[in-house]
Image (cartoon, rainbow, N blue to C red; front, side):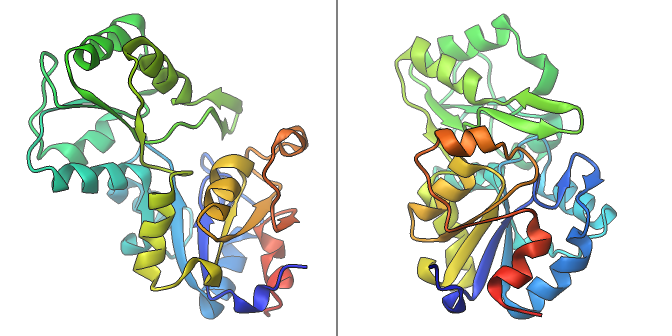
Length: 259
């Protein structure tokens, strides 16, 4: 049995836990204030279609009271890394909204230090991939916001950027540096901000591999919710074993013994 009494902080995934697209998952607005009264909360996401400001605005619009500083997104992890490198030349495969956060860096389609891969939606095509491949072949390094296989939308599952990252890795014979979940440094970044050791925190998410597996590898308690992209078949096929499985985040207070 997992001892939840030691938990003092929660790393809460957003998409698939609190909402899917613009549809709020039932009961999530009501449960969040209770969780915040008892725990230090940080909100983690691999979403690479929205800037931090846009993501915060969406949460506010959907009725969730979350401070901008409490949100940890995968694009922001890439941004921190690039800032530490000075002013590297970048080739950005990012949504236009996210590109605004990277405007500080010189950008080029002809020569780059880094190719940064995020979500560009329906714009993916051979020409875009081939241009990125040639930059990598010429010496650029490959940075991936994340490497998710798929994501849940209001109309069903959609292929995520992991397949495109894998294609570029294979063609260029280079391994991408991954910044979002399940990268250990992503979870450690949020834990450091909370001021907590991993054994005092839990990750709550709908993805058995990136949320639960990623969190457990750094020592977090992993709580899987059966909303969003959760599928029983994925859980059966995974080697990851969550510490707890609940129908939705609405059941989290009962699991943790709070009211």
